[in-house]
Image (cartoon, rainbow, N blue to C red):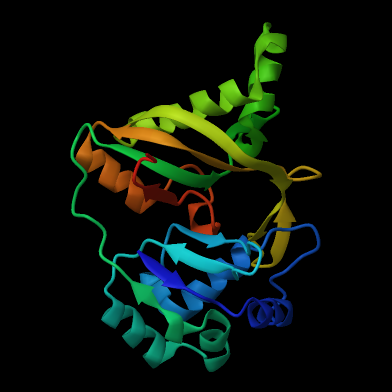
Length: 242
């Protein structure tokens, strides 16, 4: 796990100069671009910008398959000084994650994700769009009025956890908002994608039980859901609260 304490003002100024920030878009592409420019193929992924909370400034967390020396060497050799200052590469801190988590261990988690599914446009498999999994369910099921957003999101996350070697024991929505996504398109121009108002941007917390240590380790390294390279899907773990 890595941590950086960026200079958010300098990061935003760099994003404006490079035309990476668009009205109505999120800043995930900006942080993705900064990390990639600083560390290349060693850049942390998934990662998360933990937003400012009161007097505590925002900071970046991520999982990387590299040592602190390797990350510092890459930045020292190739990183532009402006980017190094924006990320405050000098603040880099790294810790080694456990080699494995034993089956049956219960852990508290926090996770920022986009609870979406992909569907074809007018039956054309070559054209797909993302849609809120709750909206998808309400449109697809005749008993849609009986559905709750919490229940749909819980089932969505539980299915991802099952594939990732964990059982979802409980879940709480910390916050739910809508945000559009900024990405570089086929023409290599940065654009805002998604329906008007954006898609679901959710933070969950809760408890899980490890069922398959190897699959769970792979899920930690890979992340959960879509847009894992752009600030979503990083599974943060804590001891179970007393």
